[in-house]
Length: 293
Image 1 (cartoon, rainbow, N blue to C red):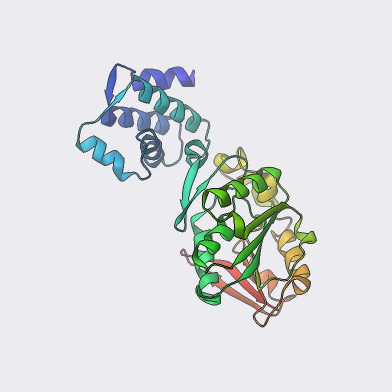
Image 2: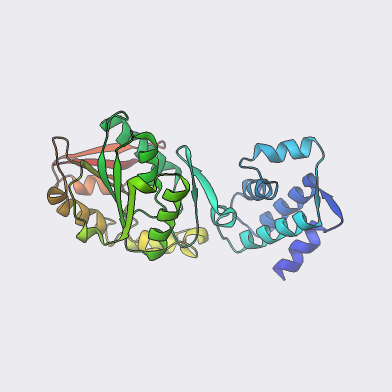
């Protein structure tokens, strides 16, 4: 039924104006109450046009570009997937993150914009001209470790761990596509089993309190790995494992763990871990912490 509706609205013909295809797709997404229908349709159209940004869609409209039957079918298939609430990032298969492009695939967590802020915080603290040997716990797509390696000088290395086979494989592929495989080692390892001697540890661990999982958007609840989301009763189960094991895994004079957390998290960490410094995200929420050891 849904597919038939999309096919009807997009009116496949020998050629179809980008403007018309886009307009009809937006209407279809709106009627299905899909979030951000305009942005979704534009990103998917950009992918059909073999472009990496939404401005290409506006150029195609301005120049009265048409879609041939093959491109129409491709766009229709993408819109049909979006109607299931599959995230745009999974549909297009790649996404920009802090000056790098990452392959993305379900069920590995999609990097969020605020996580780019964590990269900047770590770089500002450590100094982008200083070599580092660091660990990324719960690496997912590899976004944190690879974005840091992309900015740090040659000789820096990242030991990345995750409990998801899909995540480890994806992070490894991303390291290879970015030319960073020699500096990046991803393995199927639990946070409690991290071993090494690191200048610092970074992590975007599962941090959503279990009681809040039922409120997640369909894009998250249906497609992303719940192990990357569920942080336990207060959202800090994995964060505590990382912090409790950190003293044995850190070296040097500036030993620290950097974490992204639920906004309730930083306050809950202050008592058991006195060396906690909290930092706000772009919306003013306490999102990040540095714990010094």
